[in-house]
Amino acid sequence: GSPTDPEALRARAQTALLAARERTALLTSCVEDPELTAQHSPLMSPLVWDLAHIGNQEEQWLLRAVGGREALRPEIDSLYDAFEHPRAARPSLPLLAPDEARRYAADVRGRALDVLESAPFHGSRLTDAGFAFGMIAQHEQQHDETMLITHQLRAGAPALTAPDPDPAPPFTGPSEVLVPGGPFMMGTSAEPWALDNERPAHRRLVEPFFIDTTPVTNAAYQRFIDAGGYDEPRWWHERGWETVRRNKLTAPLFWRREAGQWLRRRFGTLEPVPDDEPVLHVSWYEADAYARWAGRRLPTEAEWEKAARHDPGEDRSTRYPWGDADPTPDRANLGQRHLRPAPAGSYPQGESPLGVRQLIGDVWEWTASDFLPYPGFVAFPYREYSEVFFGGDYKVLRGGAFSVDAVACRGTFRNWDHPVRRQIFSGFRTARDVTAAETAQGLV
Ligand code: AVJ
Ligand code: FE
Image (cartoon, rainbow, N blue to C red; front, side):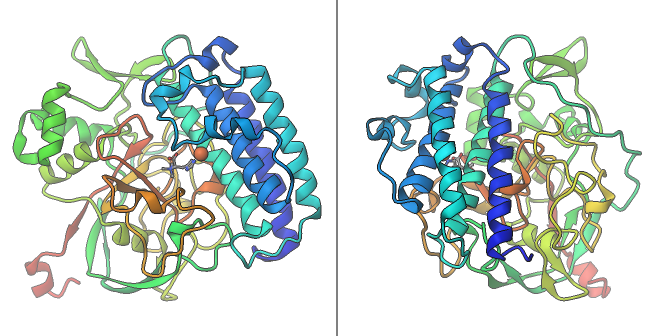
């Protein structure tokens, strides 16, 4: 059936919930229980908080809101309310112990699958089962990504393994691509599981611009470091320069220099920084400084989405760069299948009609844009998902990373974080305006 056919959507929801739980189980069983209750970084919750929070959100939305069921454990709601307790304070809360949290999440899941079987499953209204089950599968996968960040920050022996992406021949295509100017449809009103901030679809005018064909690589970023990028205030946003000075930053997070070589710690293993991989664990300030040093800039969110979704041949916006079909392993590096980005230039099958690569998967890409609502935005199903963040100190990231599942990644998907953050799986690509000379020569 079509992606909005009720029975097809019901089946998709079940598959997505099961896949999310498999990942959650792995991330919370590959270390001993004491590591689940420990705080590995003040930026993160203890893993056992994420586990019970996943169950609690599922209980609130699928059992109570959709299923009309009584609360199973109303007394724990406030413990797992992300707005009541900052992450740094969560380890000292009277949280469910690992075994209790597992039982609670499993109990909720059993009941949610009963609701899934019997609920009327029409996808039209955003508070209906047709949306809520997709939202909860995405929510769990988002926390699986959060837990992967905690694993990356954790000290000690490796707990997770995954095969590496296939090696790729050095990318020899053009370094940048011209995206013609003109209007395109940004956002979506059709995608059944698109979250509130991705809606509604609306026309957006974008001037012609050039965008990097691939994300910026470690080798390119090292040239910025070698050129003294971290010593030169002129490349940095004022608050970015402040954090460079205060924290004595000299490189992306998890990098260290030993015997003249850059090494990085990745999920408990120290390894040489690979030249051809997209740079990872940079803040918005670092991405912005690199772009300025390179004589370029970050793309706006609208530019990024036009590069990722606009099909100039058909003059319409597609779901993904390659068209409307769901992601597959030959198109994008998603879903923690690998625990690192693939080399820049990988996934030719995933390229956009204009030839831009790796827009989906590998690394989240910082954009120049603040997180703001689209015209016609309506908050659902709760204001705290997006609305309370609009206008705050947040920059938008696009495209997803190896760390996030396809269910929580689309051409329209919007992520956001504070511009100083770099524990997230963040990289970037750069863009530039068309020059007057190029316009005069009729190149665009
Ligand atoms: C969209 C990744 C910014 O983790 O804060 C999880 C996702 N919202 N639970 C976050 C989310 C509620 C959100 N981000
Ligand atoms: Fe959450």
